[in-house]
Image 1 (cartoon, rainbow, N blue to C red):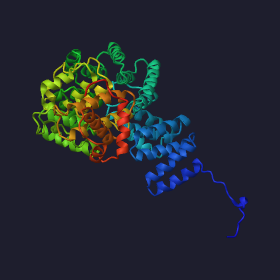
Image 2 (spheres, rainbow, N blue to C red; image 1 turned 60 degrees about the vertical axis):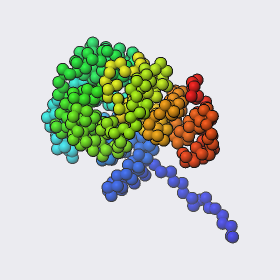
Image 3 (tube, rainbow, N blue to C red; image 1 turned 60 degrees about the horizontal axis):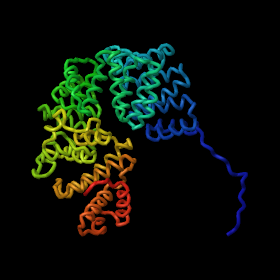
Image 4 (cartoon, helix red, strand yellow; image 1 turned 135 degrees about the horizontal axis):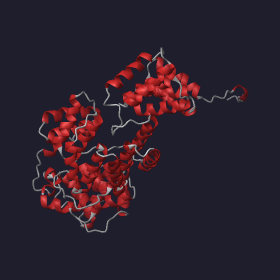
Length: 507
């Protein structure tokens, strides 16, 4: 083959810029190809993070794709670079309106009209202002007080951090907000929730009591306090619930908070009243709204309304299929199973050892006595339930978890192992109880070490092998590997993993 000399003089260097990707995005927008435009604009903003035009257009595309929270971030970043740009001001008004933040939407729309009285978006800006002022009761923050836009934005940012499991960053941001604005009640309430989620229950309650001392009757503080007392099984819960029953809020968000709180603590009649009132007024809820509405409706005797709400939920979140409230009362073919032995179940829930309580909470989710037991004010022994116990209680009650939060995803994988163990008999017998006791002992230790429970099938096989070996039952690794559709090598690896987390207990 003839050798060819490379002519470096003919090689052109190409380093794409933000402008390059922005032009590509504009071409895709002309074709109404929003996913590609989104991709190119994201790259443009990464390469040119100080270009207000790129950020604005990125925010507009995110709005078109209904990614309103991300759109708000992009538009706020653009606004920091150019606070007087009318286009940025208008789309800030629009994104706030989409998110139900009418006070801020109204303010941004008015700012737009200062610069563009006869501008391109003038008519739409006036519509936003009219709508916000017609919804007079709605353009307040969560506690009925107006807030500066920047403070409100920072609070929303902290809330998203909490949803993603980044509680430390959320706490840092919220503490800074409260230091600057001590009467920012929404930030105070969110900070209390963040404290509670990281196990600082006393700090959380102290903060809520301070809010109530300085802002008597603060609905969100009362609701959060009710939830804390419910999880801790404190007698104070009854007094707070009696007070909440007397409150008659008008603002949609407050009605939602009140209804969801009543549903969570099992006061379904009151929950259905408030959540149904929102639906009658045209409230378009999220998945959580329809989850609580369905459960509240079912447990207060409105089965048709419950099924309609569940149908709406499944459209938004198909993963919830199987967790419908009526499944709690489906026919249970094994009446002699341990999960239906009330005395056995109560003893587990009252046990001094956490792993036994975890086992009891898992059984509770399968039990015919679930509603009877959780309605009792002192049904769980632990005065300060751990995060793992709180998760398992939520799991037993069918509450939703988020895969995007690492701690919750690891927990759901651990529960997948428990369900695989349960599936062999579709019940827990006295003979099989040892398998579950071992598993929840392993979960207690492994979860505290941030174990991710990556392969549920292999973990279930490992637990089966460990129990059978301890009981001198004849079983080979190959038999269990074949049964759980894994390799012997994988089974061996996970047996080794679990051995490191063995609790000091008898099988």
